[in-house]
Length: 286
Image (cartoon, rainbow, N blue to C red; front, side, top):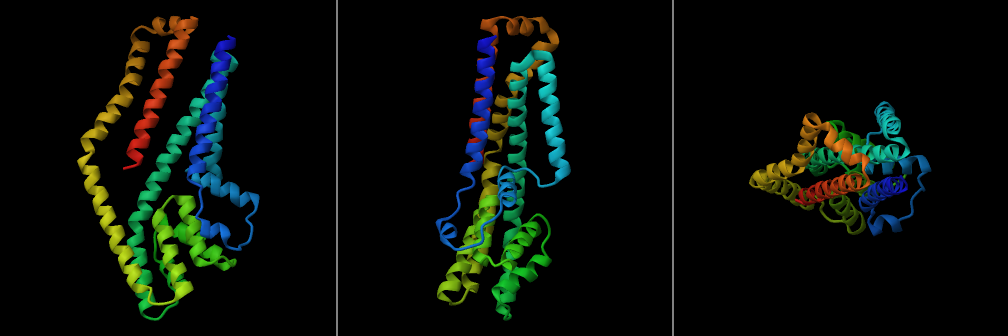
């Protein structure tokens, strides 16, 4: 029992540490932003930014559903398996919720990158007819659809409270993980410091983003077979376990009740989780 409790506590700590590390890796801000003088954000805003970097929604209703789901799963695990089961259930629930949040963040990031070229093109056209950069961004934001419109609303809000436009885009690059926001902020920063024409760099950025989108589509079509294979490899052990539970549930129950069988199941679960995480990281880097 003590070994089982220690293993569950260790797994819970590893899951929490891994989630915090992943979010921290996404929260590295550019040095130029850190060096600039700006108003300090309060703890509530910092918490909201951390929550968004993790991929979760800011909607109170959705967050309440997630909290209820975590509490329910932990309670059911505690009822069936005791305190170690509750710790294991909480760790697995947190892992699944974080994976879903990262999947949501990845989809939003992909949609933002798809919307950016048309938005930058609109900004560029307004600048060519004589608008200022800040006014062009504000006017273009009004004709942009979600999710980019939500990002631009936050950018305009920061600009209205005194933050430089380029710094606002740097901040959104950190929150959303969209690197083109940082490139756009760098273009605005260079123009503010050294002057000159900004239309040519914006045109080049639009062409770069469209070419990158085309290349990613081609890469996705080329690696389609590999992705299917990865899904099969990841799902097969879980399906085999479900089949064994449905056909001969006493086998796994007897394994779970013995010390050596429990260790074997936990070891297999750890290998399965590690494999899924590694495959996810590999495909995320494409």
